[in-house]
Length: 163
Length: 165
Image (tube, rainbow over all chains, first blue to last red; front, side, top):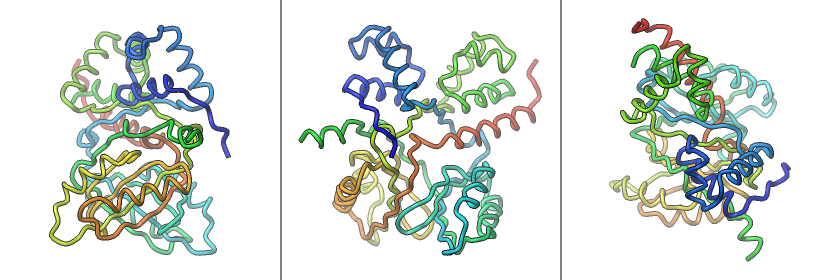
């Protein structure tokens, strides 16, 4: 298991500010946390060096990319399936995002982006034809998804250990 | 949206924290222009989130739980959605078309946290059935390939547009 990077309350606060806007200036973060800009810089540097912060993601209206459809797919695989081979296919196929192995109802899952129903169908068909895939289950996201990324509690694990 | 808008979006999809100076270099424009374009895209709501990407495994999380939820017949979806959004660590709630009604995603730390999450979700109004599956995906908020996909798509769309001079 990956060694856990210890973070304190101020690190948690910085992460929450960066979740709201990853482009927040060091000065503003310092002000909000009541610490100096240099301290902020050092803390962020440490979080990057230890691999906690890996980059920053942009969320934009999918319409401007001409994507109309987002769908989650869950897959059941044959006992003999080569999981590595399937995951490699997913890595290469950029329309399939977030591929991962899974415990529970499905063995693998991924998210598909598509311009329209026809392209969604094509992409799912491609997955269905892969060797080792037994069943593909599609759930199309409808409406606007509710994203609340700052709802995550980074220090809960520590709390429980103490409690 | 013109060519430059798409080029700026393409760079930001690769790294949303890239400085305006670096973006300007890559798209062949000036930092000032790029900054203005970014502000415009943000103001128009085209860009609505710029979120730090984390490796949750470093913070003690072991994966993301996907909850597929079936609601009781004739019930109001929005009440359940509102409730689910308040549950700790639930980061995405969406309505879906298919075999289920709603889907919720939450990072988890261990077995105990799965149990707590499921208990909380079952307390939500109008829940008929909850199915659970847990992915060993620790990228927050989304995997880097999400950015790769949209960055490539922006580039394609940029190339399809004529430059506005």
